[in-house]
Amino acid sequence: MNEEIAKCLIDELNYSPDDAKYFAKQLAEYDDIANEFLMWRKNQNYDYSPALEINGWTAKKIYERNRSIDPVTVFTTMYWLRVNPDFVQSDLNTGFAVK
Amino acid sequence: MAQGERTSAEVAPADADNNTPWDELNKADEAPIDNPEDTPESDDSSQVETDDKGDWSDFDAPTEKDELGDKGPQYELIEPLPMEELPPGESPIPDELTSQEIGQVVGNRESAIKPDLKRLHNAVKAYEASVFDGKALSIADRTLIARFGGEKFIKEQLELTLAQRYNEGQVVSAYYSNRGRISQREMWALNYWARQEGKSVAVYAKERMEYYNNEKVRAIDIAVTQLRADGRFDPNYLTLDEADLVMDYDQGNLEFEACGRIYRERRAHTLAYLADHDRGEVKGSPTMQRDVDLAVRYLCKKRSCSPSELGEYYRGLADHIYYPNTNDFAETEAFVNGLIKQIPQAEIDKAADNLGPDGKNYTAMVRTLERTFKKLFKLESAGIKVIVDMSEDDKDGTLGFFSPTNKVLQINARYIEKLMQSNYSKYDEEYIQRKVISEIADTVAHELLHAYQEEYGKLNSDKRSEMYVINGFDYITPEKGHTKYKSQTMERESFSIGSKIGNMVVSSYFKKKEGRR
Image (cartoon, rainbow over all chains, first blue to last red; front, side):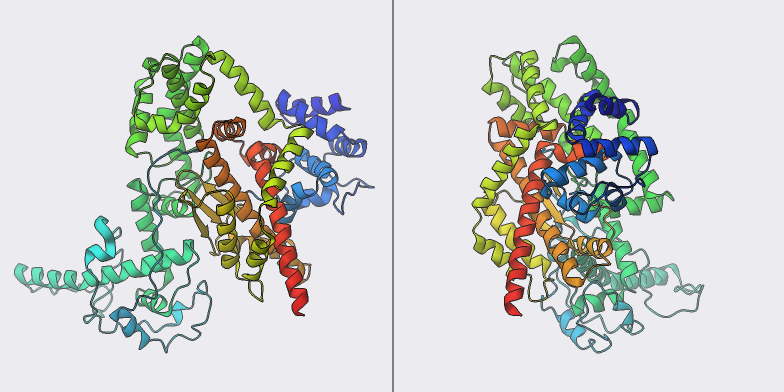
């Protein structure tokens, strides 16, 4: 699944090979998150159901915080919600504001 | 990321409480103001009667030098106040006057306007401090502003002042680091020039960027790329354009420090300088040295390294910075936890206490955290100025920033409050307050850690400092992907400490609040 995601990041989302390799590893670490990413890839939207929920957040809710974020940000945020929620706390509060 | 020695153009906050005869005069005029307790942001100055110009002749204005410094006034009256009411279209100078009499009328008018300029200067200074530094406008300030026709006119004067400073190279740092964003002050200056030229700010800014891209940055790019391809980093290969750029930079003539330009400029300096150093011929202007001394120190440490070996080491560190693995994240957490352990809980409690009973005194909380972190990070004498921005302006998704160039750190407190109120409009007030306090405290810790990283990178030569330096050179902006932006070492650490401090302050504040209930 890691390779499939990396290929998608390079071919469809214009990621550099290094970036793709790095983020594919994160996205593929948990099967449910990886499957959600592939679901997004198939539908090109976040309206599928049932949707995976981590700490009260679905991919769609994350996306709705800031509609300009790319899918990799959406799904890596889900990854961090599971691994270290503090790391994305501010992003979710502020809609991925910058500081 | 120390790009220049030019000083910040921060203006000292207006001395609104200074008891001048003018203030005494204003006190007599306080009555027309409906609600003097209003917040400074409320534009109630229009409620002041403006038709009575009052007797300004007895105003003992400070000397020009006291008032304006050596620079003299940085604005002109765009629309001088009418000295007398005249029917529309009628000239203040009657046709039948002789040229000598006309000269006298003009002279009288000019001498009448001159004290007005000084008052205008006071009004602009007070207004600037209220907009950029969150300093409250006193009743005297508001009356003064009203006398000049209200905030719109004063804002226009402030824009002109900033634009002039900006063009004189006084408003320098503007955008911070290589993140491609500009300061609020520079935004105002840009606004002014864009309006003068009948262009949108975006078009105007883009044209300026293109000017540098086409005329100078591109030349550096080509030259440096060629040098690198040839494996020769001889400073004699610097092109005229590069030399011009260095000269411009040294002289402080660069007006708009575009992110890409600085990035390339610093690269060019570094490469040229490393080559010099490698041959034992360290030379060049002090400015160049200022910009690259970190890289040179780094090279000194590994004196036996060839440039290519240096490149290998650089790439190794870069991987660690930009593609952190689980261990690197754990290392970040350990580093941040180590810092937090050194903060006494009493300091956090004090910051929370200073929010006041209604939890809205953000400035006081920021100041307490500022002192705490400056002490923790040994930044007390680093000359870093923290600005709490309480203006209503839209900050376009920026909660705060640290500008290493002029050592200014800004917390967009009011913007954060508005953002949280908007994001959590369906939640209760306490929930929103938790988010606001947490985010402001988070941003203070976040930005001050950036200040620490900057200083640490400058003053040390260990692996951590090298990471900060390299990360500073190759900083990833959020536009390149939010996750990648926040995964890089400098942001990873700052986001980590921010969330922890935010939670600590919120927890302390609401614990006390529960106790009070």
